[in-house]
Image (cartoon, rainbow, N blue to C red; front, top):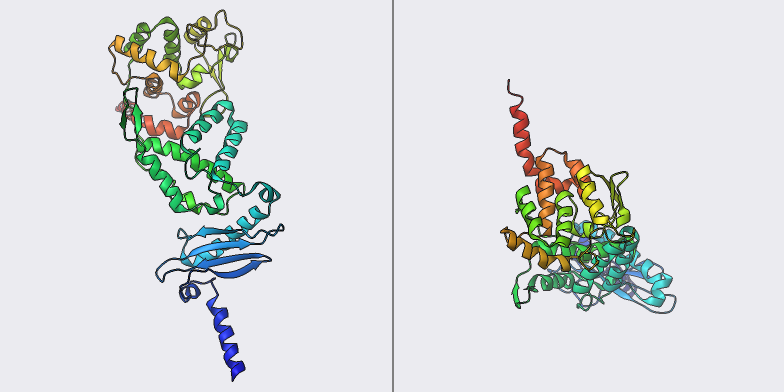
Length: 404
């Protein structure tokens, strides 16, 4: 009789510790410690159920060759259907086991959010060049370095921690000029900032340095419907007035923006060697797209660029300030603002307004969107999103010509 009772007790314990089915997990008594199952030598998957109504939390632990016994939380995995969670937990746990047992992990420790961002900067440096990497690092320096999230290992990162980071970004005001006044950050701006963190974490996950992307997949989703079209448009006369109101060095730079659909930073990064007057070709190598592109220039544009390049060495900036230095957003911002006021133009006009106006003219003039996207260094989807409405008038004119 005693043997039978012991056997029944053993069977109950075995059933109670099953976590691979929904029904088995629902029958588990609530407790603080996880229920563990062995899925490989020295590797265990755990399921902890602290309250009857909680979805439960998945965990993993292993024994390393150096004797360490790390343990991590994989999350609730609520993004998956209940009957799929065990399988996904096993996959996430195995990835974490591989990361823990990697030789680098034994010496340098697990990958943190900070390390993920640093690795991604290096990746962008190799892929797109120094300018793109520097801009990316500046965003990380502003929002990640020193924040509470920065030294958390990816294996321990939780949704709550990522959500808290997002709230901190949302609640941090932006200073307006030198007056000390502040305003609420726009959700469109926050989308751009969280996108770079999401990219770094996704890259780390793809490299096998994170057991799962569940911690940031939902919290770092972009706000929807917050991106706005650039509404301010300057016609040709207004652009001409702005150029005439500017100092000579700035006028050269504005003339370049008014005749080429380039981002201001890309125009400022051009060197004399990028311009071939014989072939009438301009090579744009420093831009957001990260790829070189060649623009065939009309004769009028060649004349302007020849004037800008006169007397300069091949390695010099094509467009320079009066002191010979290259333009940047800090050096053109206030002079453009002064020129805008002198020309009597809308005060919200900026360097980017010229790019928007030039692209608007190209689209409204009937140039196909693929060509506009290629010479502008952006995607057809972005041109369609921000300028597609201008095609309506072109379509109406084309339809009118069909009337007999």
